Amino acid sequence: MKIYSIVIPHKNVPQLLARCLASIPARDDIEILVVDDNSDPDGLKGLEALSISRPDVIFIYTKEGKGAGYARNIGLSRSTGKWLLFADADDYYSDGFIDILDKYKDSEADIVAFGAKVISLKTVYRLLPIRNGKEAMLSRWEVWNIMFCREYVLSNNFVFEEIPVGNDAMFVIKACYYASKMQREEACLYNYIRREGSITFLHSNSDDLCRCELLLRMNQFIFSIGEKDYSRDLGGIFVIMCKNFRLIYPCFKMVYEYKQTWRLLYSFIRVPYESLCRKIKV
Image (cartoon, rainbow, N blue to C red; front, top):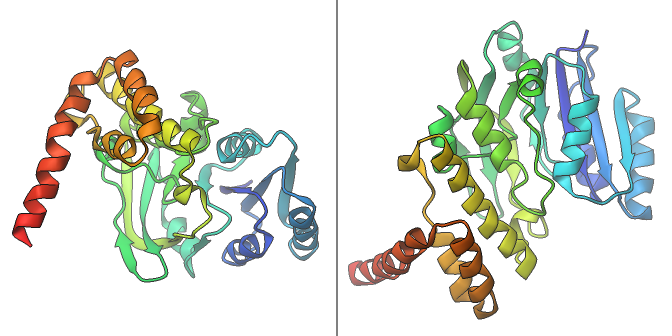
C-alpha cells in the first residue's frame, strides 16, 4: 500500500526535475507522479532519460498544455497514497524529509503543515508552517509545504484551478479552512527556489489580470463564509493598475463586477499614504 503520493507538474525543466527526484527516496510506500504539461521535444528527451534512471516514477504525458493546475489535477486523480504532497519541478525536498513525515503517517489529521526554506540568488529565509485556515486566507496559500489526507481532499472535491498563475490558492485556502484537524511540523522539509522564468515572475497583461481576478474570487469566498475580517486588501490590484495604464479599465471593471469597489478605493488612499510615510521615515 502506498502511504505517500507526490505529484510533480513539469514543463521543459528536466535537469531541475532530476534534482527534485533525487531528493525523494525510492521506497515501496512512496508513489511519485510526474505530470508533463506538453513539454517541447528537448524537454521530452530529458524525461525519457529520467524514466530510465528512475523506474519507480510514474510519468504521465499530457498534450493539452493547460498549465500546472491541470497537471496537478491529473496527478491527483491518478494518486493512490494515503497522503498527498505537491512539489514543483524546480524545487527539492530536504534530506531526511520523509523520515520526519513518517511520524505523521498514522495521524488522523486532515492536513499536516511543515516548514520550508525560500531560496533566491541573494537571500534564504525560513517559512514557518501555516497555523490554520484563517492564516491561509490572509496571506498563505503555498501548496508545497502541506501534506493533505487524500481521502479528505477527494471527499470534499478540492481541485486546483486551471489558470495561468495562482492555481493552488483556492485549493489551499478551502482545504485549510474546512480541515477539522491540522498538525504542524516545525522542521524545514522543502526548499522553494525563486527562479527567474518561473510562473511567479511572469507579468504579461493576461497574467496580471488573472492575479486580479484571483484576488477578487478569494475575497468572494471569504465573504461567503462570513469571515470578512480576513478578506484580502486590494493594494496589489492598485499597484498593477499604476504600473500598466492599459489595465486600469479592465481591472476596475472586474472589481466593479465583483462588487468590491469600496475596497479598491480604500487601497487608492492606503498605498500612496504608506509609501509617503516610508519616505518621511527615511
